[in-house]
Image 1 (cartoon, rainbow, N blue to C red):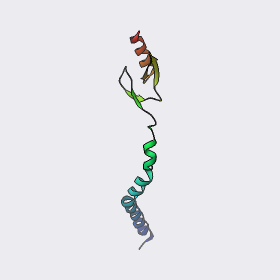
Image 2: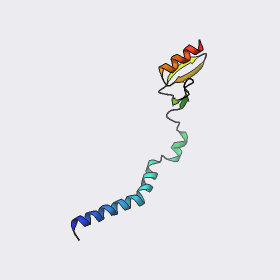
Image 3: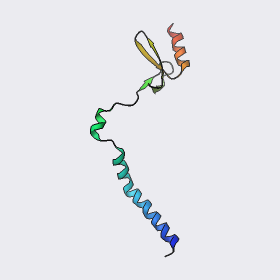
Length: 87
């Protein structure tokens, strides 16, 4: 058997091995422990822009508090439009 044919068969065997058994290793190692998952909160919450109705991450949103209510906006333009409509 030629060395090239042997290399091709070894590569195909490795690919077949990863297809058959690789998913089991990836799914078990990527999942966090069950007990730690229950105590964690989401990293960020999606909030709706009241002007254009897009959902955006709260941490990166432009915010404005009016009479104790905080509104979140996708951009400064939406925040300015909201402010002009509220006056």
